Image 1: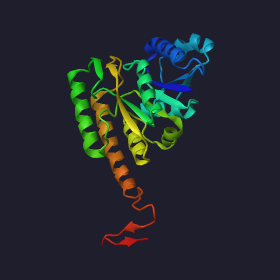
Image 2 (image 1 turned 30 degrees about the vertical axis):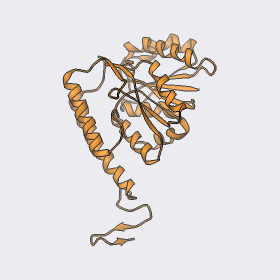
Image 3 (image 1 turned 90 degrees about the vertical axis):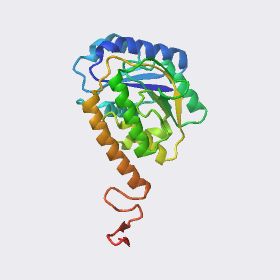
Image 4 (image 1 turned 60 degrees about the vertical axis):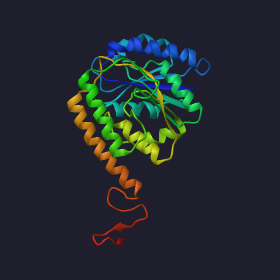
Length: 261
């Protein structure tokens, strides 16, 4: 069964059309098992339950979950993933910048052997029908450069809100993730790489949504700090060190360059 997770933060005006489009996709993709759509409210104050009330009452595939407060996109996606029942799980943005049909491309990559398939807006074969504004596009390019330089991830578009994965291999990563904001994708990819999972980037069609909740300056600074934090932690773990300075074998390097218990 396929589970699709959609985080939403005060996007009730988009939900009716989005839910209809995703359920129609599930009708075609998963007619036997039915699939499921999990909408996770990230502390919404615009009453998404009112918008979805009629669909919730007649379609058991739709589930509405609520976080106790606004905690961030990463927290909302994580919650949805951990309660999902499907053997394959995907997530999309509520404005459907990537249409549900793009999930089919990601699932094909999973069926071909990938553990985690990432939609890409910047790979050969991708198509951007509506682009971001110049300022946001410039910031995005700068951030992608910094991610490549610091993490050495071989993924050109870590932040694309269209990903799919095999539950058994990737859900355990979500159980231990701590990043609750927009940088959660980087944490996911770094841990997937550390575990030796097969990650594949898949070109998709994208139309930038006007309702994005990303605040370029404020959220950009938060993401830079998160990137630094994640990179340092990843390098410590790759070298066998814990965050307290001890290696996984119980040793720690002293100031003289020798190993000490």
